[in-house]
Image (cartoon, rainbow, N blue to C red; front, side, top):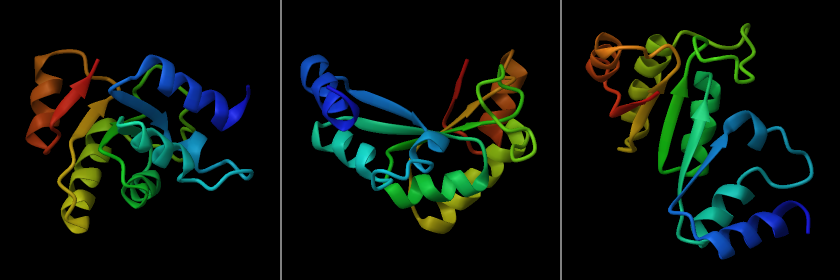
Length: 134
């Protein structure tokens, strides 16, 4: 099995509560509609977290109807972020929180990248993040 069939098989056999996607992987696919993965996960009762590295990817996440956003800044450990497109974690979190207010979508926003101590956690929470990813 390949592609969406394999994805559905994994969801069916393992019944995860949550699935996390990297936004860049979803909106770069030319063979399938971009929202297929989110819709499939939702159809199996999964919550969907989308990891975003830019405000444009956050817009896509809101458009796809995800259940939470993980805003990952360039401080993250080199997980495929294109430095010329990315931004720092705290400034990205602030922008994504503002975007959620504009969209009137009260979904959890998580901060990721460079969160190393309690001060970083406090900063992310002060900017409106609901939690952090370490």
